[in-house]
Image 1 (tube, rainbow, N blue to C red):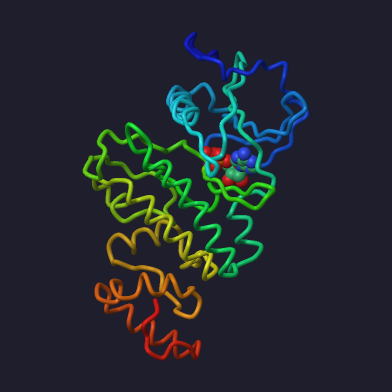
Image 2: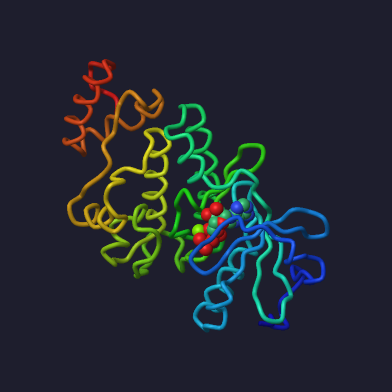
Length: 285
Ligand SMILES: Nc1ncnc2c1ncn2[C@@H]1O[C@H](COP(=O)(O)OP(=O)(O)O)[C@@H](O)[C@H]1O
Ligand SMILES: [Mg+2]
């Protein structure tokens, strides 16, 4: 499929990328991601699966992702580089992140040490803050999951995959948007319930990822993502917190307010403290 005539400088001539010499590095909803060389440099190529590439709605979604992604520039956002001028396929070229996704890292390592978990959390938070502070309108990612966070060679994390992202139409949190989209396991209750929602849905997903980094996970792994989302939306179910795992600054920030709001948490904390033999005051999260 050709791009319209307005498509500017980020078009890359297909002769500069050897798609035959490619290595499959990831698979997602609409297609595959390959490691390819562009003028001798390793980059990632995100493509639509050829069996569905002619479906109008798929093409539209891909073009929407392109329109949004090409505007983004931040050290913690995977850098969009261009789009391949290809007569029959749309292909995005982005920077290649050699260390793979946070999902792969967590699967390999399980729980992370405090220092690493905090550093990773800050990387993701900075990328997400850039999206949420985007001008003139905030961008809501809507599918923040460990699979959509990648790591570069230096160990820094970057947020990717803007296939479900939306530009909000108001500056504050009061806009209305509905629709059940994203990965169930990291989905905010209001999205699952198909209520109106704002950028705080990304904060919910972020908190679950942070929890997973500190505690290992994902939580409720025996259940399907949809079951987990259903319980969170309709039974107010949340992952339990083990006080001994979290660093002091987080405990101090979180404890008074959370304890006041969540009496159930106190029971969890006492139980966990007994197990961990730590913090007998129960003042930690
Ligand atoms: N730039 C990249 N560098 C390395 N791996 C990548 C890159 N982009 C994507 N991947 C891998 O491919 C997977 C799918 O890519 P993603 O952009 O999330 O597509 P989808 O929209 O299909 O989920 C990611 O989870 C990751 O494992
Ligand atoms: Mg993805």
